[in-house]
Image: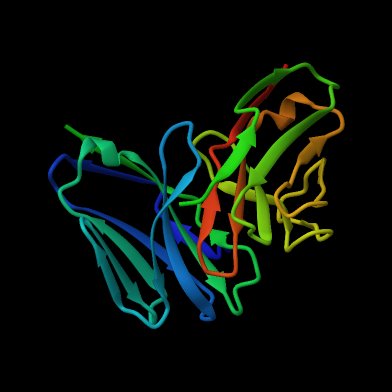
Amino acid sequence: GEDVEQSLFLSVREGDSSVINCTYTDSSSTYLYWYKQEPGAGLQLLTYIFSNMDMKQDQRLTVLLNKKDKHLSLRIADTQTGDSAIYFCAEIRNSGNTPLVFGKGTRLSVIA
Amino acid sequence: EADIYQTPRYLVIGTGKKITLECSQTMGHDKMYWYQQDPGMELHLIHYSYGVNSTEKGDLSSESTVSRIRTEHFPLTLESARPSHTSQYLCATRGSGETQYFGPGTRLLVL
């Protein structure tokens, strides 16, 4: 099965909150990441969280980590049309020398 | 932020041609990666490097090759391009820390 799983699509109205979910399988994950990709561009690192943390907040972004359930979420408050993009969850394991493992991405569509 | 440069940004080429996609970085990062991504789709790791003279194959079987003669450069070569190689190619780097940075990508169209 997939190592990192995400739902493929999410649609929200402008001004509402968006919550993008991710599950992972490897308990040795040390860091977990959220990347944003706009059309035709590379991936932009949004935020990351260390595995000994439960929550991290950065302006409109809130990351929640439930290690017991191996569940990571990204909440975007007051979602704007400029937030429309693909969001990738990723993890790094063990010592960190191995490549990041990415989910398939969640396409967020913001309706004005 | 990271300085990662990919050239060309866009390339249209005929079947059978040899092409090299360039990736360069100015941060002195040891680890570098190449991903293949179809539009709006998942990332596939095709090659990576832990440092000079180190290259590894990724998860996706690829007909491309890479080299890492200098820390700053990690070129990707296709000896004979085919339409199935049409995709976006993303280069990424990571230093001793935990953050991986991506370049802007090269969009390749093989006719």
